[in-house]
Length: 257
Ligand code: HEC
Ligand code: HEC
Image 1 (cartoon, rainbow, N blue to C red):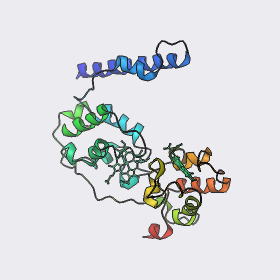
Image 2: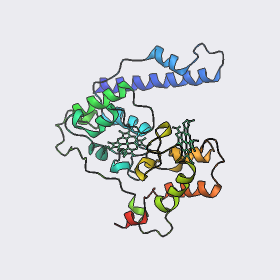
Image 3: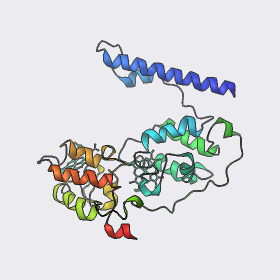
């Protein structure tokens, strides 16, 4: 156990050193390495795929790549990846049977972002196949029988928004804006950049937990979209922002159910 701990500490120290080097490198134009990738490439370590634990390896991956859309407070498709317990709901006995592995192995997730690295995918696989241990202490304990794949989840707007009279809804407020300004380039038959605003579901692919985590908002707020035409009015941008802050509900009808 002590050896493992020292090993982890050494790894942290190494990454810390690389981080400092990269910062120095970024600040000096005379730096010998002309890109971060080159520097990373030089010191790249073999992919660590043994002794993978939730706390040391998996949680950091999910935090940086998934929780913007999958958390307790904002769970796309009912999937929350911000706690050990809720992550286990997407994990089965083998990686191949686990939604968590399937979506990253196929590159389906993270949605609208670069796929995970081969090493990260491999680590998720090894972790699940080893019984999805939380940490080194739990690693040796027998496989948890409560670990079951749950594929029955459906997309639901967060229920904190249900009885609020001032909630902004997709069908009533946001869809008309998208139809008028965006649908010509982003529809289901021609989804430019993989983005379509034809349906609520396809629109949700570019919506995260907060406006800032949502390409839908950041693109119109910066004026980058709509491409080649006048930016949205401040009111329209505000409507999109408010809708995301309200939990991005689809319609008053759906929320009443
Ligand atoms: C930009 C938002 C976004 C990010 C980031 C994101 N997802 Fe998703 N995810 C979605 C949406 C939207 C859905 C539901 C619609 C769908 O399946 O097409 C979804 C669905 C899922 C599902 C359920 C799939 C199913 O078939 O029921 C899983 C599991 C999942 N995501 C895992 C992940 C993992 C793991 C990551 C990080 C590696 C991730 N997601 C990152 C938006 C995102
Ligand atoms: C005239 C065509 C056109 C219109 C209209 C348009 N877009 Fe786009 N959109 C593009 C193109 C081209 C790209 C991909 C290339 C790029 O990002 O420069 C894109 C990319 C995007 C992306 C993905 C950005 C990324 O980094 O992946 C989002 C989100 C987006 N548009 C949102 C919108 C929204 C919201 C509207 C309406 C307010 C809109 N677009 C209107 C052409 C258009």
